[in-house]
Length: 315
Image (cartoon, rainbow, N blue to C red; front, side, top):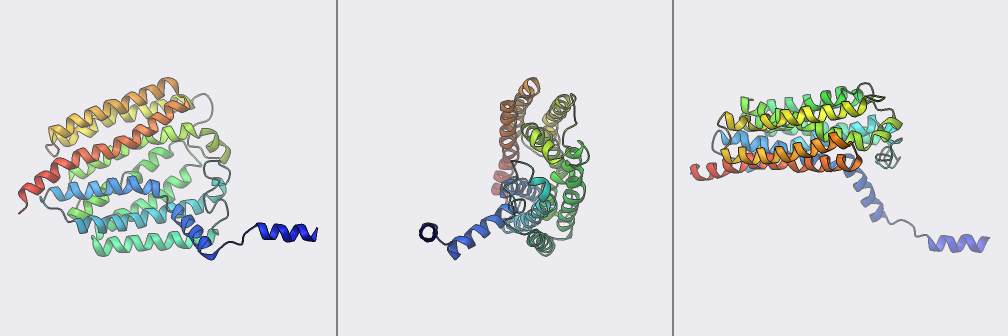
């Protein structure tokens, strides 16, 4: 027996400090939800660039400052969200391996890390972009953690509640560029606000059993949940198509953008209709993929003509 223990000890290598540090760093990185932050960064940068277009000028340093501050606040909110929901995350197959839920990072350390990131982000935005962007980021942080996060355990209307802070990044970008919120900024807000319904309904349907197991009430119980999901999806997509054309109607975006927005909107609506008819996991995945493709492309189409104009006019 002693020889077996010695042999086992020789087989199992002792973790190297460098490997341990890399694992810890990757866990803290995972706390910030980098995949979510990519979409936040895209909409924030688009808001800044479109806001700058009114002056026919664009400060790339300003874009970087805005993205850094917003990413810090978003990362802090994501970390604190996982600290708050650690017990519920542990009940879900999709989230059980998250760093706090699995026990790889102590809750107290995650809380301290999230608070530090959040304070650093707000302070950075205040110093680098101005008070309005910092205020909007703070309101987003508060809405996400103190309204949306608890609402997921109480009401299926949580998506409606969470869509408000979720649509704030383009406002933060616009405020950082302009120092105020113009009507065009609220058009961007409307697009992101409506986009979130089909996006999250697809996720909620794909993982509905997981959410039920954890005690989340993101969908109503009983036979009405399928109609709830399809109604939330279709109504939002139907409203999203004309909302995406408002910049064209007001003269802020080019007809080329309008054509692209219609094509993207029709494709997105087709995926939403297929999901509503089938409510199958495969249709939900297609809708989720369509939503991930739709939003960056719409903002890119809106942005590119403006950047060409700014390049031509600015000396």
